[in-house]
Length: 330
Picture 1 (cartoon, rainbow, N blue to C red):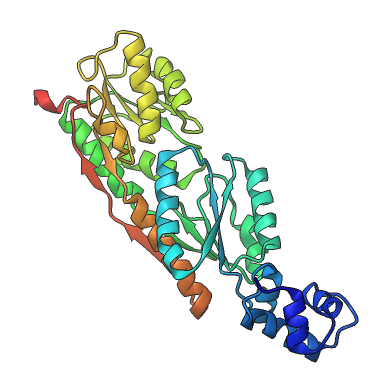
Picture 2: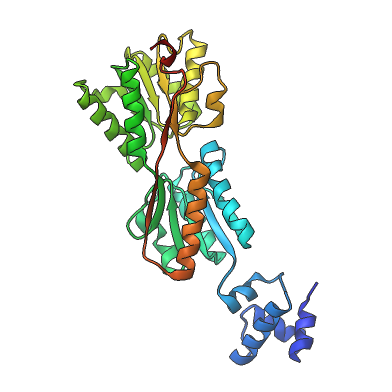
């Protein structure tokens, strides 16, 4: 393993001079500092990442901010990011924001300090201005799953079209009084899917009932809790913002003797693998999760290398029809 002693011998200086140069301390001329940094990189001195960054302006590190590392959906996106970057020699620094904007800002500060080359952000809380510190530090940012603002490139699934397909299918299956457990009210994902519901109801001359809509942080636990509230309103169908929430609804129905789909039709979104394994397989919308992560990482590296203008990539979802909306009885 290369040490600072080896670098010192190569440069004809003392080890203490090498240490001062690599750590940005005073007492070393710029010419000598550049020589020491270049030599450390050439010799493969890997224990000082700062030296490599100073020499190449590349850390070969990418930050990835997730809202919830326990979510299978976000885990699949993260897999796509890592699968793309690993063969290219990049490491990924994973940050969990816990759906908390303050925690997300702390993640951003940490990634700045680490001098990452770029960041893929998956966020349900971030505002555009929250990410400006990264841009101002010369760190490229790509938003995945949800757009954050025009200053940043994004890779998203078409939530509006996916929800249109699903709600039209639910109407075809006999749904007339649809309850919804959505995510955060301000989330673009929530807005797009709710707008799709309103359009489909209007197409079928069904009045939209805002009392049939609740907003949550989109967890299994909230699916379970909110199911009771909506079922008490005599809904005939329930749409969950994601499959995890839908599984919470299904668990509530199992615990309280509510038969799916006879008593209640249920639909989810994301197409998690477990949805195909339950007693009444879940009708849902397939999102291209791993591909989304790969595309976000690919776009980020393009921006790092070419400094291109922000770009938006939209992936098309598809309807996954199973049994939870009563399809077997049509």
